[in-house]
Figure: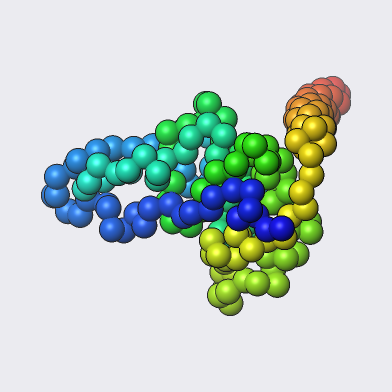
Length: 193
C-alpha cells in the first residue's frame, strides 16, 4: 500500500501568483507558515510569530492548515509536522505538502511520525530532484510505501512519540539550566581573588 491509500496529498499556494505587487490592493492578510516555523524534530516553532502575507485575492480554505492535517516540507530535510488546533488557519505555501489523513484508516499523528522516520527519509533521498536544493513533489509523496497497521498500534506509537518529545523537551531545558549554572559558578570563581 502507499500513502495515497491512507491520505489525500496536495500542495500549498504559489505565493508569487497571489502576492500584492507595488501599490496593489490588499484583498486579505494571512499568517504564513514558513520553513523557519518547522523544527527538525517535527514541531512547529513560532517564537517570533508567523510572517504576514498580503494577498491580492481571497484564498480558498484548501490552502490553509486545519487541525488534524500533516504539513511536510518538500525540500530537505523533508520534515513533517502534525497540525493541532493552535496552528490551524495558517496559509501553506507551495513548498509544503498538505496531507489529510483518512482517519478511518490512519491517524494523522502516525503519518507525521512515519514521514519523519529514517526509512522514509532514505526513500525520499532516492527520488529527489534538483542538485543544489534537493526537493520532492506530491506524486513522490503519494507513492511512499506504507504498511496497513491497526489504529490501536498507531495510537501506541503516537502515545510513545508524545512521551519521547516531552522527555526531549525536558532534557533540553535541563541542559539550558546546567549551562546557566556552569556560567554562574565559573563567574564566581573568576570574581574571587
